[in-house]
Image (cartoon, rainbow, N blue to C red; front, top):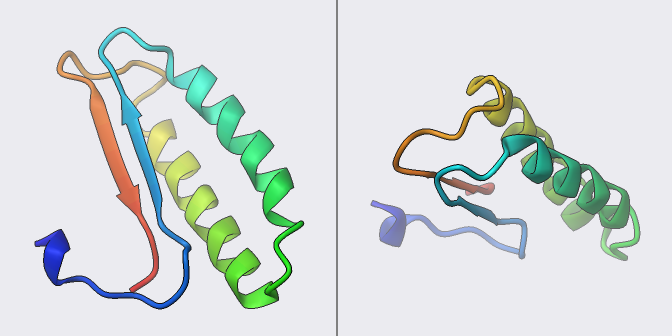
Length: 79
């Protein structure tokens, strides 16, 4: 159903985590990206990206730093 979703801007995040990859590494990388998001010139887009990053970080916490056996894919964005 993702093909029917439309949004304006570039505030979509795709996370692909293979099996056995530590989710703590992904969370650390997202923290770095959150800091970089403040450099986005369009404030609305920057807020959207920051919101997406926060959503993904909160979702990752639900897995208790254990990647599922088949890996994990997360798409997050504003529609």
